[in-house]
Image (cartoon, rainbow over all chains, first blue to last red; front, side, top):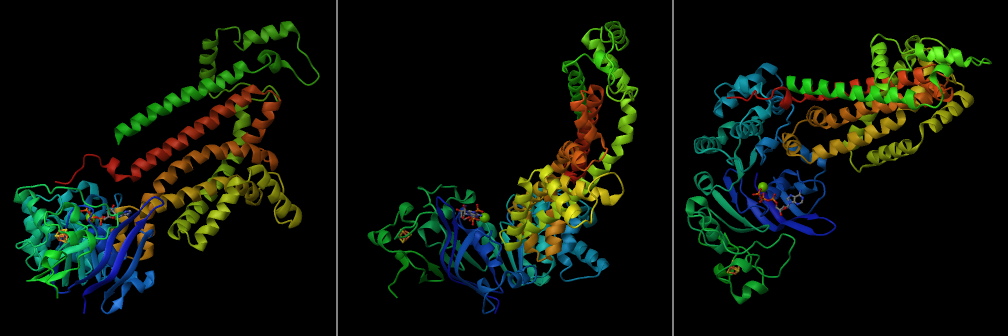
Length: 312
Length: 314
Ligand SMILES: Nc1ncnc2c1ncn2[C@@H]1O[C@H](COP(=O)(O)OP(=O)(O)OP(=O)(O)O)[C@@H](O)[C@H]1O
Ligand code: SF4
Ligand SMILES: [Mg+2]
């Protein structure tokens, strides 16, 4: 119960000129009661993947396939029903904190609104929001509540978003780059916070991040996404990468020497027969251009690369 | 905030000087001799001596810039001169007629805002659904119909056929309904269209996605989160519409025989009553500039980012 299961799931953004395929043939289970990380370069489809679980893709996005949650295909639900999951089952911390709050409303209103889902008593709402903001490292929560978003720094906005998302105690939290733009100290606090989300009644977390160390320290399982697909997933992916892309991606991190990977990512508009990483891959073989690799089990991981196809 | 308002007041002043110059020049370039026109009565032609004396009396022998300064001085004293046609003080005429136009404009702006904003919000929320298409259709039709035609249609239906509303004349609320409605339908439609697209534009913003993800009610989402943001551009056009409503009211007042400042302005064009026309242009221009500036300031007041500039936390 509580797992999120993708079945042949695709997301396309069609325009007159082109068809951007942001998520491709996704078959994937994101396990509940765990903290799962998604890493991958910009534009690989991380945000779109999480928005499609929430049902928050823009209405011109075309999707196909299914997403199951609690044994129900949530993509088949009427909007009205599906929206009931928001805040109650699924909480969301969106990507750009400076654009994620209404610019002309005080934090108080935007915060209370969310708590209102679970608590009707005004005094209790205030008490709870102060508690949460304190947990999040704000020393003077009442002052923060009386600010407008633009009066807070990026890090403060980020924490406010987190506070709002967790305040209604959803079962899942989807956090899109919650540490972006935070300085090292606050990042540490943020790590601690995400580790103890369970104490807020949240038992499953999906966190999208560019920060490998953050993912390593936080996540039970990590998925690596490339060009709309999961290319590798497992419990020690970042310590023991197998997929050529994962290896290159880790080496390109500032903390790991910042060795920029050669070549350019295939455009999401382009469909090819073979492996989507083949044009940049140093281990490429003939087969890689002819066939598209599946996720193969290898040691603790699943890897989308023929090097790990043991012909099962 | 303070600087903003000072800047605003400065620019208002400059615009006002511009408008006053324009309306003054209107009198100068107008065909006919003002001194002669001011003396002419029905069936009476003044002698050249009389005209010459009047010219001096009116200061028309002075250089043009002196004339302008004198004209402005008089206006500041509340003196717009005498009407060529009625020989009455223009100021008195305006004071008598302005309330009718003011009432008409107010009713129209209320109809424009209330219906325009509501329809736009409903359409935006229901983008591409039947209700949206219906609203789009109606507003498009209304938008493309000329005001005078609508006014005549209304008279035909509600006065001639159904006999429930009076055709013309000044009176209570009943007399204002048809003029105000016909005057506001175009601006109302435009307001609805702008409101709709402004709502839709907000739906593409990240704060909308985040607010929606909170799982709050539709009312909280659309009315408390989106509307205050979406309405800002609409306020600006509402201010601008005040101008088109004032202009349009000349036509509507004429059709419905309302004795406002607008219907007489139309007459004054034909009767070459330039003192009145100058006053009309100047005052409606002034009203327009004041209203749009007030709206600008209102928007600044609503927007905390400008209001609280520099007041950053920690
Ligand atoms: N609303 C949209 N309309 C059109 N294309 C979109 C839209 N949202 C995303 N895309 C496209 O889908 C692809 C994946 O985008 P996505 O935002 O999921 O990337 P990401 O992995 O989250 O990147 P980042 O790390 O920069 O946030 C990109 O090619 C992007 O251009
Ligand atoms: S399948 Fe081939 S091209 Fe793709 S990553 Fe593996 S070796 Fe490289
Ligand atoms: Mg993203």
